[in-house]
Amino acid sequence: MSSMEERGELAVGAAPGSSSAGLGVGPVGGALDAGPGSAGLAGIQEEPGVRRDGAASEADADAPPKKRVRLQEGEAGKLEERLYSVLCCTVCLDLPKASVYQCTNGHLMCAGCFIHLLADARLKEEQATCPNCRCEISKSLCCRNLAVEKAVSELPSDCSYCLKQFPRSSLDHHQSEECQDRVTQCKYKRIGCPWQGPFHELSAHEVECSHPSKTGIELMGILDEMDQSHRRELQLYNSIFSLLSFEKIGFTEVQFRPYRTDDFITRLYYETPRFTVLNQTWVLKARVNDSERNPNLSCKRTLSFQLILKSKVNSALECSFLLLKGPYDDVKIKPVIQHHVFSNDANETEYAPLPISDSVECNKLLAAKNINLRLFIFQIQK
Image (cartoon, rainbow, N blue to C red; front, side, top):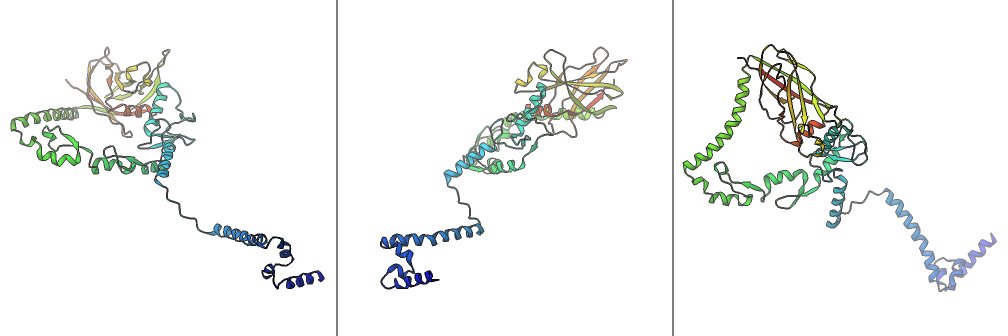
């Protein structure tokens, strides 16, 4: 008690004429008196500052998050470049245009490359693997990544005509409907006008186009060429309609299954189980690129097929047949009518090309576990 009283007396005694005493500084202030009060005051004033910073940090923890700072144009460009590198296909290194598939480890593949990998594995008789991590991939093991598909659709892309940027989801509509620089044709192209040019020049061209003033003789020649192409299309459908009027018609669903030849260098071929149509037993076979040595090295791939009669017949059996897509596949096949006279000595047809539109459709068939089609056979009565 005596020591505290002494300190109090000293503090009161220092009050008259001492600036530090005026601030309530006791003996500590006297100890700091060695420098004319400035250093001591600075040290004393820093302590409340430290306490205020701690209180501010506690308040910031409960405060709502700050709004995201808007990126500058240069920073936004860098962000888009990073997104391009993250979301690109691991095979072609380009942004996917449609569906996006991912392996079990999350590596991305566009639909075209994914189907191509499965088709290559089928041709090589290997298990398809991810090009990044080498894990197994298949239609059952891989799934679509809808989040990446949505993100890619919102990334900007340049219009190929006006070079302006639009989200990828709306780019096709802009290029086909809205862009003033898109390539278009004259409305008189049906009567022979060959003009092609940007859309904003179309109206000026149509005013000056000379084709509306052509004579009737000139127009008749153009219309004859159009009629010939239409006749070829109608001839196919008329032939199918006439076959449907036959007495003996049979059809069935056929399933081509992959097999390998017994050669030293095995080759892929397809064959269906035996099936019965028109009271006869048949088999279908198919091969890739006419059984060339390494079809996996070719970018252009085709399938050809033949129909084989397995039953014994007493007389010649004249038939027409065609293959169409099955009820559960989305492959695009153009109907082509084939014709053959079957006998015990000529029970196999020549290999005919499967009428698919392009190599992309062929890869879809090769990537599938089996190929499902529908076969029609029409027996011609003499």
